[in-house]
Length: 331
Ligand SMILES: Nc1ncnc2c1ncn2[C@@H]1O[C@H](COP(=O)(O)OP(=O)(O)OP(=O)(O)O)[C@@H](O)[C@H]1O
Image (cartoon, rainbow, N blue to C red; front, side):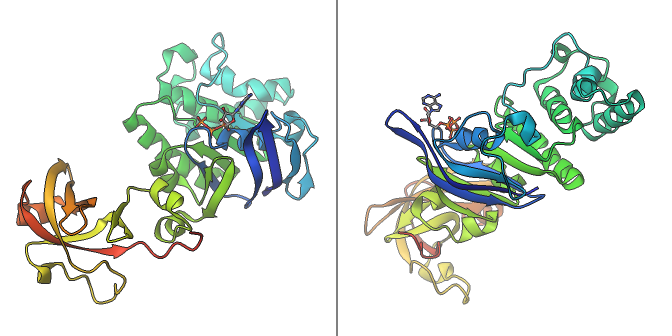
């Protein structure tokens, strides 16, 4: 099912939580709403779900105007950051809950729950109670429960937000696989750009109640419309007045060493810089630098292999040259 939001506005007093937001979410896609805290992501998701009414604007699911419909009528699966499971029901019964209240036949419930337990990897824990699960297992149970009733649309509001970094990473890989198997149109709210880049077919970047840009992860990263999108999707520095990404900066001990490949004509030219700090981050090394000419501080990210060859240390003067982020169309 596709989702269209057209001209959505939502105010709290004088404050515009959504300011004329329009977005098309294609059928079967996994689309992330990405933005800083307070940018309106949850407000937009809740409007799609029917949990909050818009002041004006339209929500369409598969072309049908559902703006006046209740969440139940919209046939939506929802998972929040803190999932409210039924504590007194086992994992199996939690997943079966929606099917039981819809009075589905017993054999159908059993088959569906068995399938979902398998998909979310909780078959061996099916007799446990929610309190006996880890946070990550509980969120997987929540997803299985939301999917049990075959919703038209799956809405996820920071579903992994309360989990630690490693578990988050595992779960977002798992979510992507799950989506590839189930294909339900999914909207994921996140403030984590890594998460959005990792799992999404499309990302909508929100800022102050407006959508800044919508596109495929690579398009947003390589061709951001403006500085906000460029900086929200990854760290970025200003160098000779140009925006550059840390891993697009070449460093060397001579000007000749930093010539970029011939095809990248869009570059900053050779810049003399002083190394301020070198930080080893496992596979990569972050080098913090100061431009000799302008005093601008910038950050380069090089491989550990390059650092082993260069052996950069704080205080030394080197040369840098960077490929620019393509010109920002909306600035
Ligand atoms: N019920 C409410 N009453 C007043 N203001 C609200 C209400 N709900 C949301 N807001 C405001 O609307 C803005 C957008 O909120 P929203 O929850 O959509 O942001 P968000 O992007 O999801 O942020 P976060 O990542 O922090 O959850 C915020 O400034 C918030 O304070």
